[in-house]
Length: 253
Image 1: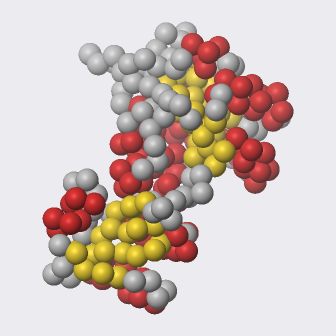
Image 2: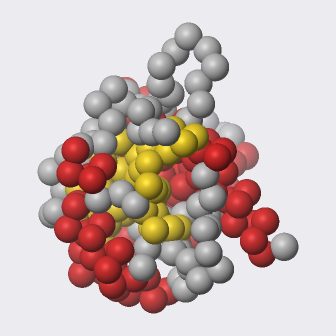
């Protein structure tokens, strides 16, 4: 069984991090883009098969995604499960974790992964039964970040949050419009001994589920000055994560 990955960013990330997953690559006939040709040279140097295809075939295989003239058939990503969390926690002594509760659109999942990578998030946790798949659309939107940021799928999100709190002393902050304190009134790193932090983002409109919200140590809101009542989840994720980055950097200096 194979999966499709398309777009220059996604294929370049595969070449950099997991070239062994690539089975074969298809490029569009007649295109001589320098960046595309550079990728083709890398593929040929690795001895990977490169075949020509017409635009219609590439459009069909990518389900009319923005493939940029290149598509790869790859072995499935190994994926991360609950039992991988201890190892991920050990790899980083003061991790930042992103928890996504109810993000069911692959475009939003991919955008959140891309933002998480930019903000230095160590890994992402999503529920198995209420999350978008990490499919070719999500990987294309993630622009290669899906190869660098582990996405852990868990059976019971509330139980996983409780485990993070009890076993690893992770401080979990959730976002909710009704929260009394705003993002900018909150000290994410309250004590010098607190090193692990998780940010929980809920679905657009619905927000976090009740049980997820109850397992947060603290709730914060994003102050909204205009007429809209909420932001796209990937935009909201970026706003929150980079405030965490700012505060974390301030502690180091």
